[in-house]
Length: 121
Image 1: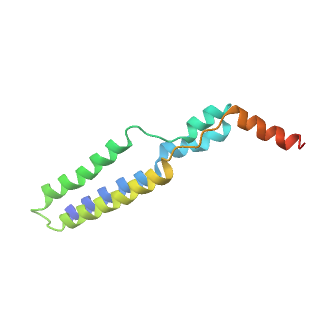
Image 2: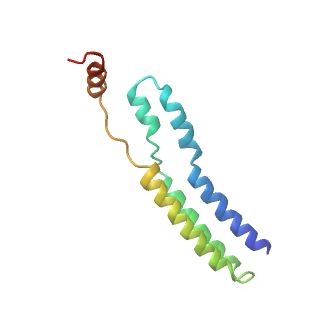
């Protein structure tokens, strides 16, 4: 029973933290106060070069945890499969929605937009 609680909490906490991505949230809150558009783009781009390696090590942790504790609690295999499935959906959500690259903007686009709003002729 204690082994199952440890496995379940390991899965839930790590995937919840993977969904929240607190460091990216802080950068996104700081982005509107950037002095230049390049600084704002850099803050909004939440690309983490180590993201895939972190998430892969997490999935491997589920597998190793299941192999080590399966003698005591055979349902750990099911919990590890559930963790890997949940990990897949968290990674899919982050890759497609949170880690997508921003469209490129330039100073000319911003200046042209502002001028067209101020001088509508």
